Amino acid sequence: MKPPNHKVRTLWLCGALHAFTHIYHVALMPLYLPIQRDLQLAGVEQATLLVTLMMIAYFVPSYGMGVLADRLSRKKLLATGLMINGLGYLGLSFAPNYRWALLCVVIAGFGGSFYHPAATAMIARLFPVGTGKALGLTGVGASVGFFISPIYAGWRAETAGWRAPVFEFGALGILMAALFVCLAQDEPGPAESHRRAVIREKLFPTPSLWAFFVVVMSFLFGMRDFTGSSMGSLGSLFMQNAYGFNLKETGVALSAIFLASVVSNPLFGHLSDRGRIRWTCAVLLVAVVLVGIFPRVPAQWLIPTFALYGFFFLASYPMVEAALMESVPDAVRGRVFGVFITFGGLIGNLSHWMVGNWVKGLGARAHSPDSYYRLYGLLSLLLVLSLLGLPCLHAIRRREKLAGKTTVGLSPAAIRDAQFE
Image (cartoon, rainbow, N blue to C red; front, side):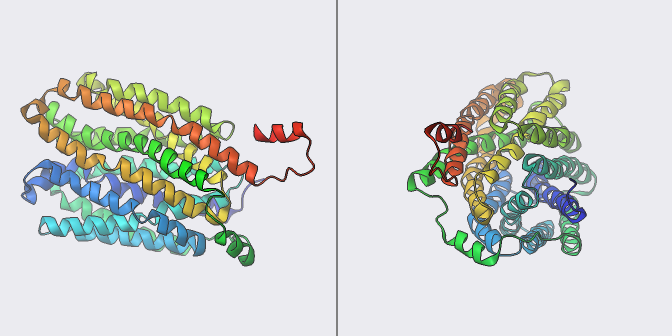
């Protein structure tokens, strides 16, 4: 049976907001060097710090945003967040100095923090069947945003300066927020009495499961996020320093990471509805190989390698998110995702500032491709370590599933079957 039209419309509108959320995340990556020159910064690490601070402001409020997403209108939260995000970028485009720029990226990051807890919970409620496919389709929005952002920012900055694309992205985000208010529709949740009862319950049934979730799984998937974020910022500096790419060429190369994921996100999201852990492990293993070989390929193969890496790596996100949302009831999904994205995201997005310092430490060797072999080898190793998060996620799903089952009166064989579903 086809879902109602308003569900499909809201799904695609969430995808559009997803696009803008990630447009803002990567728009500055091709612009580090012109920002450094314009604001007269002492080193490139100060320019990369703008993205790190924006992402810290994006991830730190995530649990609070998850609480709001479990209690308030998710539609209104999504529109408000994009409005704030756009205003932060508008302010950045007029930044007269570095302190102003720091303040504006923090405002932009805070606005972005509204999106994922509210949108992921909203979509899981709208599509309780085929959740992986639905999240994969909204992932197309992220792919489009990731693709458009660096290529447009690099092209516009080459001809009009770095402030022009920043201003235009900010203005368009504000317009999209207004459109979302007019066209999207909240899906009614559980009865309010039931909703209040569930919210009063503990987020996880036991302290051990809480520790298992927060300390182990979020940390491990943070290693995945660290590698993914580094591939953008480090890739930008690597191509400009080691191969002399200009801003336009760098933007095109970074966009290639996200182009192929327009196909892979819904494809693997759909396939994972029949085996999340298996498919997630497969795409991340391929990504491990591609990260390791990236600095060793000839210049003409950098863009195709980026595209292939993005095809597999980015497909892991909707699959992991779908598994997470299926593990917990709707009334706490916002908070659960908030916890997950706070810990994992903060670890992952330290990378922008750290890779700026790494490249600065290379000195004159930053212009030699082989100086980057160890850095990319380290990123590949971190991605391998992130695979340990998959059995953790599987264990959490199984325990949460068992917590909701009534086994009284079942035979021992039936209980054993339930444990291994």
